[in-house]
Image (tube, rainbow, N blue to C red; front, side, top):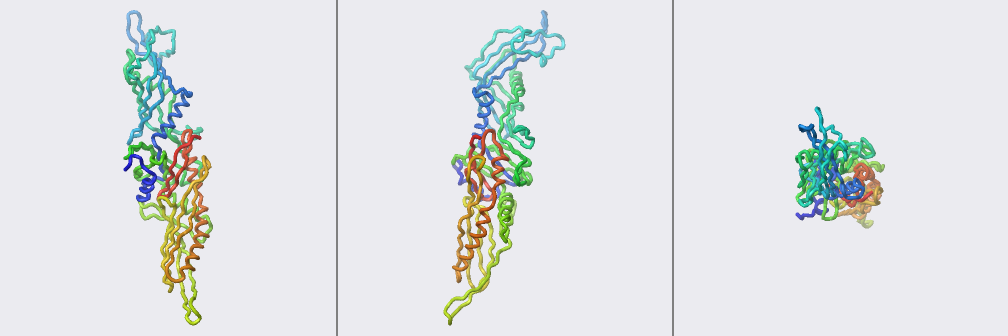
Amino acid sequence: MSNSPTLSYLLGQMAQDKEVLNGWDAVLNLLESSINTFFQAQFDQMTGHSGEMTISRIFCGPRLPNPHGDYSVVTDFSFTLGPPHFEFTGGSNTVTVTQAILSGSTRTGSLPASAGFDPDSCGCVANDSRVQWGQRHSIDLGNHPSMTAVVQLTTVTGVVDQDQNTHTVVLDFANGAFTANNVTIENVSSQQLSDQIKSWFMTHGVQYQVASLSFSGNSDPSLTPTKFQFKVLKTNSGNIIVQILIVTNGTSGRSDPIVLEPVPTADGYSCSLMINSRITFKDILCDGFNNAGKPFNLYPQSQSPTAGYTAYIAPQMHFSGSFSYGSCCNRHTVTYSLYLGGTYSGTAKNGFHLYQSITPSGNIGNTITVNADNPVSLSGSGESQTIRITPQPPVVNVTGGASSTINDKLKSILNDDFAAAMAGISFGPVSYFALRSVLFPGNLMKMDVVEVPTDLVIVGTFQPT
């Protein structure tokens, strides 16, 4: 396939494979480049928009014996780091962060050290008067020195408004493994230097946020996160995707989602949110439809865990009657009895599709098929984005006697009852989930496309808040 996956490819695969989330209630897919944008904005804010981060450490070595008095070598270094480059590792929850060393300097000195001296408690500070300092030397930039950190994605609470119900995926540099590249400091081993760099990042609490999940607030339990895990996926096209696999009122998924290219980058999109067909059909479609007060309901059904959900109409509506035609001397009476039920299923581009084939009893000899598309569309902007169903006129094909009478009757029912019920279905919990249960640092998910190939999928980009 193309190196740039398309929206049509994504929708086609989801429609073909049906329930693609492998039991997860929802899956959020974020393109690496979008997360990098989040990270760069956070770095910019950390550094006061200077684009540079200065790290410095003063530390003591062990006590060294000397006839004129024992001493400890004190090392003072300062590095100015440029903007970070983040590289996610496919199949691993680690991120490699590289920052060029733009400038820096080092110097050493000696500190008198008596018996029992503890290097970790020397308490030396900049220009410490207890230290006999040597000359300061600039870092050689000819070899393009840099700092590399390998950091695990982790989960923390209380990052967003101190809300313990909000769980945030972060890069916490306190958990990183650091390497200084192409830079040496006299009498300091590479491991010592790495440890001191890590100590600076730990002391300064450097973290970058990926995304947060709010475990409270949604009116629908089926769309309230209760737990999650994340993974990094490298797709066949070479895209790096961070996936957040979410549990709401179900259980953890059977295995990883099977969507090959979850973000259609060829069409300019950078994220997608997928919601299990069980929630889509049972909690959104059926519950919403059944609140319309009609004399019939929708019921969810699934033939297997991988088949995805559909919804059927029950009880079936019974229509019967008779009519006569012909001259006074050659009249014919026709009777008919038919039941209208049908099944709603997902489609790649036409929303929820209603289909039924009916062969009425009686002597009418008709064959009737009913098709009705109910596309799902978007309106509004920002936090006011909403999802709704826009029913289209049904297509009723009737063959045999009384076709015109039955056609008009069925179209009237479908337009007056079914279309009104479908149009009234609320996707408020889905919008809430996309815009308020899932939070991005400094950004809002801009929902651009919503479809129901079986599992519901929202495809979009990000816009600053």
